[in-house]
Image 1: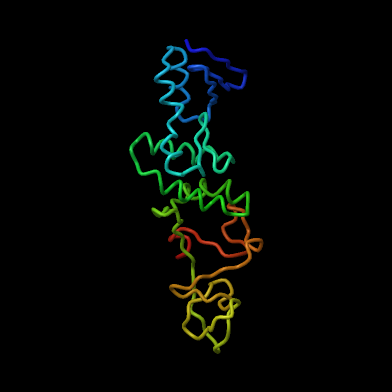
Image 2: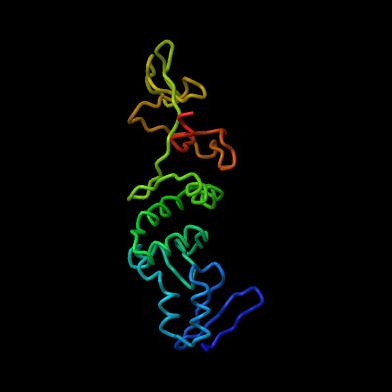
Length: 207
């Protein structure tokens, strides 16, 4: 058996070749690590605990996989995307789009959006592009009325696509980049329709 300490919250500290490693039930190979500890399998334990070396090498320091947890610039990443990335590495899938997505996500000023984004995306089946963008859809309508300006001071004429909610505030033609202040956008993923610019699945936006 490998030298270890296990507390009453199932948090393990294991010593291998004079170095301490920590893990708990959030590690995707939790049971495998326990088996390696009980069997005294140093090599097997090291392989499981350090499965993030590929991540470290790719991210050039922005991401670090340490003791069963993924960190972005020293901030611990939520367990669900961490487990997804580790599973992709183990199964031979390309995990880099997930890391690119997380890099973009952690630039968001809303902590709630950062914490809830992946669960919402995976629950709704929102795809992630190779360069880490989410693909979402927005319901639009055709503008009807006199030529005017939208809230971004762009020309708005009859037939242009606009946000469906107001029918006039944001021109949303193909190729338009639509923006607004981040603080004006609700970050509650439990609200299907709320203040600010949002996207959803094709089925939701189409309906």
